[in-house]
Length: 106
Image (cartoon, rainbow, N blue to C red; front, top):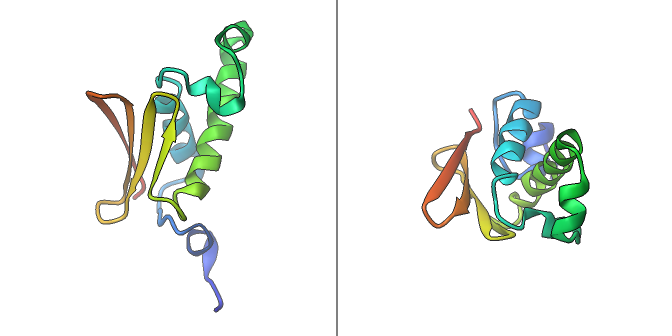
C-alpha cells in the first residue's frame, strides 16, 4: 500500500502546523501530575530542570504521543491520559479528572 504524506503514516490526520500541535500538546502534558514518570525520572530530578528543559521534554513527549495515537487511541501519562478523537479532529488531554485540554488538529 502506498501512503501519501505524513498524516497517512502516523494515522492521525491533521491540517495545522505540526510544531503548533506539539507545542499545544506539550503545554497541556506539562500540567499532568507525575508526567515526568514517562521519562523514568523522580520528582526531584524533574524539579532540578529549568523551565526550558522541562518544556523541551514535554515537546519530545508530545511528539512521541502523537505518533503513538495512530496505533493506540488512548495513552495514559502520569496521572492523566491523552485521547485521539478522529471524528472531531482533536486530541483530548486529561490533566486530572475534571480538566480536559483540547488540541485542535485542523
